[in-house]
Length: 319
Image 1 (cartoon, rainbow, N blue to C red):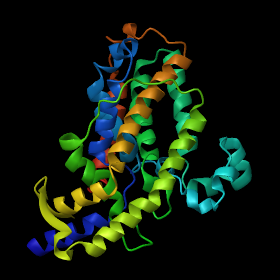
Image 2: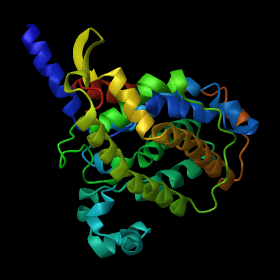
Image 3: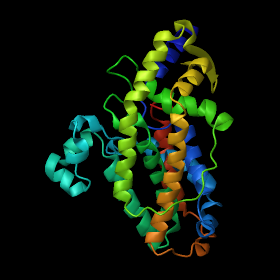
Image 4: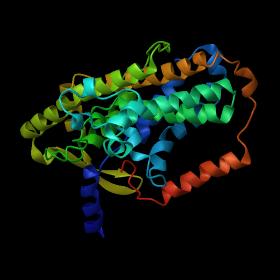
């Protein structure tokens, strides 16, 4: 039995990852709430637990909706050295140039973010409490994903450079280890975004420009770090897993000069700013009248079904 557990554990670092990790996604939504003005806090603060827990819904939905996966990334390098000039920012123009199937094959996160922004704005305009909270939780997930460097690279998990597992290492292991211990999330206030499409593309461009550094520094550290100290065995939920060691993780974070903390802080500010922008664009509706409303039985049942679908899927948190 121990051999089987160890064998499974050794596979875990090599799993493909599509998100910051459940922990980081939830913290990003949680901290974003505190950047909102009082007029929005009246609704968001009492529902902070919902926004935190449901930050991971888009990843859970991947087990039930085949169209979900491309919404989390963009393989910008697929489009060549001049992708920033050649890729249309409007979805209709991009489809006309490349076709929807081709775009979906290489990720659509900046376009999907605009769809979600429009949905959230409409929910505010119609004062639909349920959709405001659900779209807020979910757009927070996609915005955070756009801030991950390897979400903007076809070498998303180091699979082309012998670095499988680096995705989860960067966006999950290190935040879980250092975020609440060492990082600062006193950020300021949500800011209005005049051009959300440009804003989303700028975040993707930042991520793409950082992707080579993420890979290069991990490779350099691995080459100079004692091989028998790179990983450590830890207990997680009663299962022994092989994990990047604390020493290796801390050293890598220092080599990146705080990149992961900066991208997480930027994610928090971006999430809050998008919530705020959607509310402003909807006419700044009074949210106090929505505070006492509750989810309907049908809405709760729908959310429970999604949870059951996720639990019936592969039980690797960041698969």
